[in-house]
Image 1 (cartoon, rainbow, N blue to C red):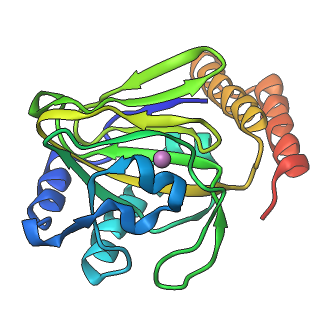
Image 2: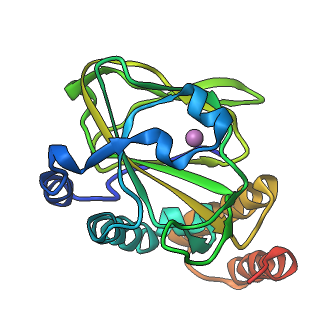
Length: 226
Ligand code: NI
């Protein structure tokens, strides 16, 4: 499932994050990938595990975990400290797949990457190109969202970032291990949850909505690892 989550960060939060990213904080993005990724990755990122990356990352994690749509879609068990990247002057990240198992730079707990999230920190009019392109069974999906918005997609998808031919594209990126490993099961739970909420808004709580809520939780009980 790909899901657009609007307004994860307020414009003020975006401005504050961006103001902390001084030019000297950026390093070569190839520091964090394997040999296959290094062949196609051309961007800059904030060094992992530094106090700056941790501080800015905690703003992103707090905002996402407080967001009901993110919670319902990702069902997060563990979140790897977010990365921050910048693309300018033709930089891009060619077609690749993210590694399944990730360990934080500062030696924290290893996690399995189930859900990938990009939080846009530049507005679309600030740069040319730079679309995140995610492939799935329905084709290639181009994503370019307002600053503060996020896109969530399965970490199992092949994807790329198109060259940024003018301006600068700054984004945060993170991996989540979900309580529900399988994207199909997560999608079913998300659909059920969203439709129960619509129904409750229309008719209030009754025996049927309580029954459906019970069904949601019983599926979660069957599928979740904690
Ligand atoms: Ni990637």
